[in-house]
Image (cartoon, rainbow, N blue to C red):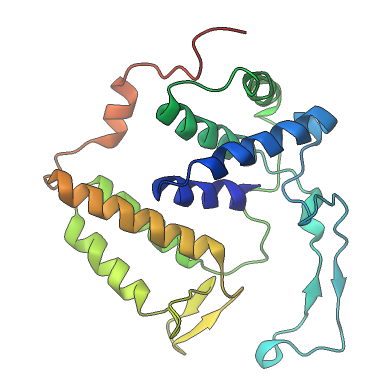
Length: 234
């Protein structure tokens, strides 16, 4: 769910709006069947809920990096951040079209009500991985540098990360700076999403001529007018 939301952020930044609406419609159908409380953090490509994990002991893995697994037992984990990512996708669409479709609003309200009741519950954290650094996190660093107006530093990081791509311009999940080779899932959508979002943000910041250290995005958000997702109906 998180991956899909982040992917939609990149598509939205590139002007692909129908995918965001289609995703929200899919979530709406999912919630109508199971409700927010039973939403899983991941599903199969065909919507499968049961994703049993299995180790393939007959495979050595890349350079002996056992175990090789299929499936993902993390599908049953509770990760409360997924609701925020869903609402962020709805917010982006709302900002573009002016309001959230009245048919989608009830399921968004259901998510909000569920989070109000359960946001203090213990969960498994934001990642279902078993350790290791992410190139995506470096792009998050880039985004923060851009927000601070430190555009030259941000561009330097982007250029360095571009050097980790292979000959086809594809990124891995992680990168070993000692051995100079890709690690983790490949190609990894998360990394490409981060690259697209950071590149778009840097371009927009350069076009606006942001002055270093003078922008205070956090303060601006706190002082901004309230954002209304719909016109108060329903």
